[in-house]
Image (tube, rainbow, N blue to C red):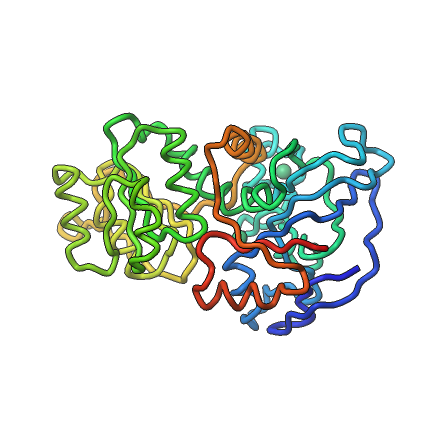
Amino acid sequence: MKTLQLVEPTRLELTEMDKPAVGESDVLLRVRAAGVCQTDVHMRHTAEVWAPSGTVLGHETAGEIVEVGAGVSAWSPGDAVAVHPVWSCGACRACVSGRQNACMRTGNRMIPAPTPGVSPGVHGGMAEYMVAPASALVGIGDLDPAVAATLTDAALTPYHSIQQTRHLLAPGSTAVVIGVGGLGRMAVQILRAVTAARVIVLDVRDAVLDAVRDRADLALRSDDPGAEDAILKATGGYGAEVVLDLVGDDSTLALATSVVAPYGAVRAIGLSEGRFTFETSQGGMSLPWGASLTRPYSGSHQDLVEVVGLARAGLLTPEIHRFSLDQGLTALDDLEAGRVRGRAVLIPE
Ligand SMILES: [Zn+2]
Ligand SMILES: [Zn+2]
């Protein structure tokens, strides 16, 4: 079968591999769609040790089950599914309480459960076929597989942060979304679908802001020195209860932490190697009282079930750009060059 494989660090190629064998608790999927993420672009370029040498990329996958392992009874050939990209143990205290994204059995508090297409040796969905644990599947019914694929990361990740901060997002509250690319646009749709919060969006690209202006209460350039004042003014000086930073560089972390409200939450979802200095001195306090800053990981299995529910109800409508699997490298080039508005998805023929 055809795959898009990170053969070795910085060498991503279209390769041929044998169709994978199905383990007892796995299913074999015919891949219908595989989303392309900034993480894939990053993995193609990095020579860092964590880069998954030899791994087929793709952590956003939807497909049709063509074979089930001997121990699988919940799924059958023909079922249309999306793949939860957190392959946790399913049995530890964190997993049982619904926090698969904080599984305790990875042996290291800094390392989450395996992610297909990202963790070394765990092949992802940029291929004609993929093996996945039956426990990581969510049924998608007649939802477009290309849409379903993008839900598993581009929607799941912001949805998880919004779910975790729902108690702060009462009617009348304010949510700020910094960076309205693939994930940010999903974040805006999710906020509109599940809360009555006021939504303020920021980006450095006018065209991107124009595309979400009709869904936002206020759209601002994040590189405008007046952005901080404009947000504080819009909230009577109090700040925003929730700030989702989908960029995560020095400047967006500075902006996010300068506009978050007391006891509010900053969720640094974008990983652009930004730094923030935490201070406890009275004079130099870097956050208002009670405010939190965390870096969430993916989302829970339940979050993915709910995201699929939102999409099937017509409340999540990602903008999709389709490429064939053969055009995978072009799709990554286009994403890297900023030519993809919305989400690029690979469709194996
Ligand atoms: Zn991703
Ligand atoms: Zn676990």
